[in-house]
Image 1 (cartoon, helix red, strand yellow):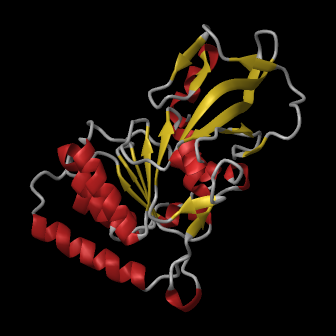
Image 2 (image 1 turned 120 degrees about the vertical axis):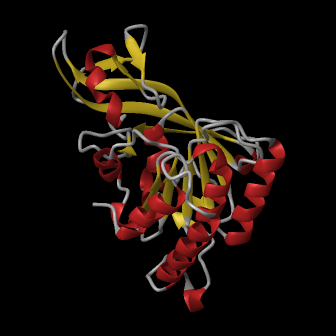
Length: 273
């Protein structure tokens, strides 16, 4: 169950559901959140100074130039919600507080399976037209903020938010959108589901190729083969071939709303992909 921090964050910042909430009320809740977070264990380093990077799951270390999420940096994840959650799961598991903004259909069970700690997770499913202000407020109090922008942002707005991220030493992950000033862009370039036989069976895992590009790689493309998800529902490096029959995504597939492509015969998985 998501903790009390999430409940208060929803009430204070979910502008689509509480349009009459005053600025003073939101400021009071944010002050309370800051005090609560300051009193809890964090991923800080020696003498209270924040570590320069937040840890990533082993599956991602070869894709990230710093082998983790660099504080003060912005990242873009193209298409896949699972990929975005997996990117921040290592930091969440290590004790960082994370926020998810603009993902009203996100399944908590799927997030947990990928490694996200729900007890240190703040959710704002529907931030409304003032989503940039919501994200800025969360950046002040959380280590990592993941946002699916409901509307495009002007370059000037993106630069201001990036400056705030650098100032606070937070990490911003932008889901499914071009983002000015992004350090790194991650995208899935190929996808193969496993588990179906000749017209029967159940999907058990998906093998993907993930590509990382951007100024953070020095102009070089980095690629890794991952299980997303693996047979346990998590994320792991694809080091060995799967013992089950593959189903490569093609015309007989359907795109989910968050960009993860699944075989048409398994549309019931849409909500957790």
